[in-house]
Length: 410
Image (cartoon, rainbow, N blue to C red):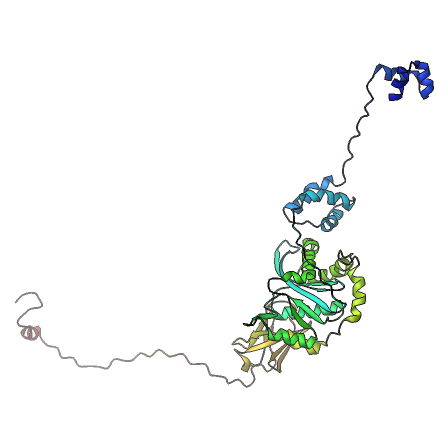
C-alpha cells in the first residue's frame, strides 16, 4: 500500500505504521518486503447467456438473411434463452451488412385522407419445408400508419380488388384517395401527353367504392414510402417466422400479426401506436359499400369447355350446354359458386371443399339434339363373277411375237 511506504520514508516504525493505519505489524512487514504495489487477480469472465446461441444467430443472419433482432429474440426465447435484447443487438451489430440510408422529405396527410398500396413477390416456407411463391399485398393508412397485409396466389385484378375490400373492412373504412405506383393493375399506360390510361375495370371499382386513384410520379416510387417501409417490415419481422400449413392459414396468421405486433408497436415516425391513432382516424373514414354493390368486381373470367363444365380451383362446375366454348364469369363466396354470362346468372353450385369435385347442373343438357351414333361400316366381300376364259396354245403367242419362244429359243 502507498501509505505504508510513505510513512516508512517519514521514519515511522513498524509498530507506529501499524497503529497509524489500523493494521497488523505482519501486514506492514509484508508490504515493506515487497516494494511493488499489489496486483489483484482478474476475475474470470462470466459466461454469456447468449453464448450457446452464437452459431444459430450467425447462421440465421449470414445464411438466411434474418437481420431483425425482434424475430431472432422470439426464436431464441422459444429455444430457452432468458437473456435480454441488448446483448443480442450488440452481438448482431458487427454481423449486419452496411446499408446506405437515402434522404427524402416526409409528406404528412390528414386523418382519413390517404392510403398507400403496394404489391411485391415473396417466397414463404410451409410447415412441411416446401416453398410457396406468393404476392404480398399491403395497405397503410398514411396518418395513423395502421397497416394490413394479405398474401395472394396471383397478382391478377380479382385478387387485387378482393384484397382492397378486405383491407378496407379490417381497417374500418375507405380513405378519400389511394396512392399507387404505375402497376398495370391500375394504369395500363400513358398517352402522348403523359396522362394515365386507366385499367377501366379498376377505375369502375374505385368509383363504386368511393376513392380517388393517385399515382406516384414515374420512377419516383419512394413517394409512397410508408407502405414500402411497412412491406419491408413484413418481410423482416413476419415472413421469417411464418410456417403456415396453407394459404388460408398464412393469411390468418398475417391478420393476427397486424393486430398484435405491427399495429401494437410504437411507430418510429409518430412515436405512437398505430392502433391508438387508428381509433381516431376511423372517425374520418368513409363507409364501405355493401357486398352486393361490389360483387361484380370479384368475378373471374373462365372459358366453358366443350363438355359444358367450367374449371375453377381444380373442380368442375356445370352450365347449360348452350354456353359451351363461351367465356363466363365466376363469382365465389365462402359456401357457393355463381356463374354469370354478362348480366345473367346461369348457374349456382355449392363450393368444392377439395380439388377434383364435379358438379352437374340440373337440366344441364336439356334441349340438346341427340345425334344417333354412326353405325360402323360392315365388311362387304364382293363375289367375283364367273368369267369364261379362252385357253389358247402357246404357238399362237409365239407367232404374234415373231417366233420368240418363252422357253428361250427360236
